[in-house]
Length: 266
Length: 270
Image (tube, rainbow over all chains, first blue to last red; front, side, top):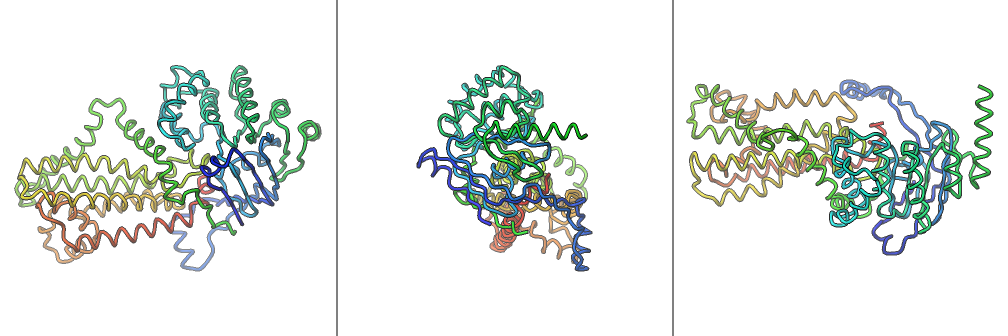
């Protein structure tokens, strides 16, 4: 297995060339039926018996994906098809069980709402956490914070702890931060549904702007209209495999037909 | 499964920890702020707590340990400060990854920053109480020499690294064996009495317990703090040797745990 996450600061010097390449990527989740107790662990070790056999769930199977500068990828698929898993793999949170992952460019992600925020900290604090995670310095962030706050339109709510926020408000905050510094690769997972229409439109405009500056965007969504509008390539995931990959109209059409057939059969 | 190999970080593991310094620094700040949010005394509580404990134990045990208050109060305060650091680092270390699961599942950073966050918090409280102990000691009995106090600087560095390593080991271990959190509470309780925190080691007459105290590395760590503060003398070489051996061992353990478990940890938290 070979995995490359080359130097992000190095990339910035070379220029904003971003790319993603997945080759024959498998990802297995190993789920233990329950947690192993310390006693069990030592007793089994001592007896030379294996621990409770873990259940292996294949979350991604033989995924191949090549994304070049400026591409906007939409990922569609039924619940549990592996969309979010794929995004987390791209974010570097998951390592593949087999296969090669190559990612060039600084990744900024907007995966799960509410994950990656400190609920007890205020909106401002969380803005700074996320910014620091994107390798920004306090000075840079102080300069950007006004702009981020303005884009999020959260106003005085930023002084409240994030646990008081609705999911739509968290999306506003997180999206504003994730896109404030022109990420080279932006990963977005089905979060727009939580924002209101006005914010959705604004967010989509910003994503268009970003992509024009030759960056990569990968988004997972059930909103096929949004996908057709934003993406130039669509990947249809089915049970952890790439079922189809191609132009938005063709793939979303095939996916829609398939889903209709499913619901009729049911 | 051939996925044990970890992905190299951009600037090396510790370089990445350093690159994220603003991140963990602000997490520590928020932890400290949240802990005292809406309390009138604020950080004063972390001072008052060991002082109150000192007062209570003084009242209870003064008759038992035949020592003067002048000697005993600074002795006890230094012990309580140290113990709060040990216990806090261990028990909060257990939860370091659970507490940060949201970050762990959404961004890729060296996991060592989460135990680091724990130890920086407990170290902050330790420093406050230690500084107070030094002042109390100065008032109660004065210092024969100030120079030995400078030996606290390397001592604090050792404690800091040791705490980081212990918190890292506990954090990884607890994710795989959740029972450890409860076991460690009991173990700490036991260890508390097997370490000369509240009683002077000289009063122990039982040969067996004296041996245990001698074998307990925490006894030597306490010496590193008490010798310069209470007795105005440099710690013995043997105390340094034990402390460094302990540090080396736990750091090896922490590095091994990180190497082995870091990339798969996220799956255990799912």
